[in-house]
Length: 470
Image (tube, rainbow, N blue to C red):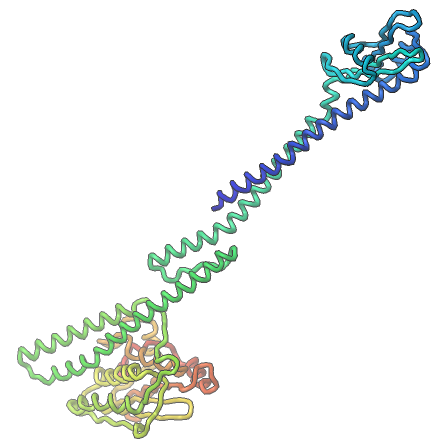
């Protein structure tokens, strides 16, 4: 595109320069010719008064010698026979006799070619009625005087205009081509999987709009991929709930070979699920979760349902399970499935990382602008809650054995999607307490200001450490 623009500008400028310079050069040449012959006519007219007075050779010779053209040997006077005197020629004639006779007969000036230039033949009437002819020689150098210089100046101006136009076209071409190259390079990078590729939104209007559209498309691609990874990770994590049940049940099967094989198979399956979760969340951008605008569920009903499921397992392990605050409906602005997955993640961590027989409790508190869910246990607690949160956010593989770094992250993203947050502290049972603050107002709404302030103070993290494991 750049060279095409340069070529077009070069062709157009060349044609414009030629269209103006050539006619102008011809006009200058014609003006120089007119100037030379005008001077010749002026020199010839200077002999008119002398011829009207006398035709004496001596006097005419002196008059020719004292004139400018005569002193340069460029003037001649042709006098016909007058009063019985023979015709005479004075000066330096160059024109042929027949050309002089023709000018005399026609009675008007004429120009004829002579060696080295041209000759102006100007007739003048004498007192006797005869006609004398004054010849002025105009050399070729005088006809073309200044023409060559004018042509050179015009050529220089034309070349300068062409070079200037090419330079301007090249700069314009760069301004157009550079954004196009950036767009092509970003598209190539995006095609090779570099999802951070973006295009500077500059250049001509059309390319700027294309850059805006490309960046928007790239953001959408990143968002879609992130949502896909999160969905795969969330679905895979939900498999851990039935896996926890299988592992607990397998532990009570005894020491038979079949029981051992079952336990090995469950452990292998759990490792495979962990691998799927880690792979799905590898190098992912952060995306929010939640039900979106208008989504919501009865948190009390969801908690009762999940506690019925986990209470059966708690009874098998001799755990005391308590639930409070679910005796009346509690609306929460999150999807039912997401809230259930978050509770399963918290309770699954209790069963996975606390000793058998450790009690746990789930409490629900409802205020005008928030729903607070507290999950407590009687385990050993977490020595450094902030480190547990930060460890999950960093994506490190350190932490509890069997931890994928996703469980508490699901909970945190659920809370933060509403403008709330998650905190880890010490429970009244002696172990860990995970407090989930679900904001009922939008993060930017008046009802959501407290949730936003709390979220800003909270430490980020996917909370890969379980609630009761350091």
